[in-house]
Length: 252
Ligand code: PGA
Image (cartoon, rainbow, N blue to C red; front, side, top):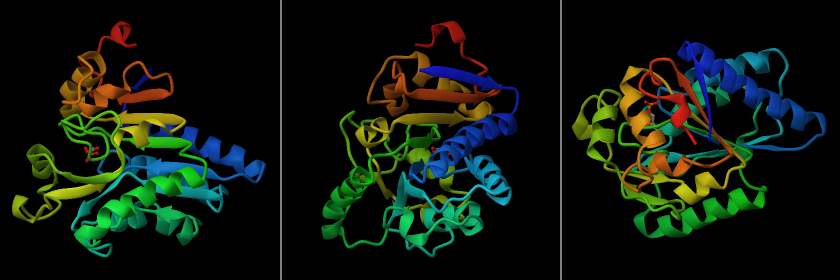
């Protein structure tokens, strides 16, 4: 695992956006596709702003295919709290990505169709050659995507229960805890780990404890982000506040 700490959230986000933009530009130059695994929440917002800046300066997203990590369940795509709405608001509406290249789990499927749908989501990722770059945030439970404590390392895209801490953290966005869905569809740990390159972005003081525990503590299903330890293709990007408790020499 590589670790990169930046003085501010803005600088950390800018770095990640530059890495993604450079990758897309490189692939565009040889007319190849870029497959991005995308995250939601407050953490990647600035990354998306920077990517929009790159687009305004000429970077095309026509060859970009995206797969989002997760969506609440049940959740209609056009609801204001949906990750569909989030992605369109923060990125897709501002770049030239083609609608058919966007993949976000469907939060409105009837229960008996979810399993098959999740299998197809995995298949689609494989069909386009796998995810080139996966962007991740980290939740206060140590989740990546919505892989909450207890998620096995070989988990794939599936329907999951949200942890109460995760629901509490989302309560403001939903106008109260009672409105936060109890379930979600998420890519699994295995789905995430098979990406060719992973950027885990952790920002702010409130992430310092869980970031330290996941990066330096025991590797355990109780803190799914700990599965990223020891993986050469993982780069952890922190701002100073999130990295406050990390002793750099202990990272492996
Ligand atoms: P946040 O969520 O960016 O809103 O803190 C991160 C996550 O849950 O992955």
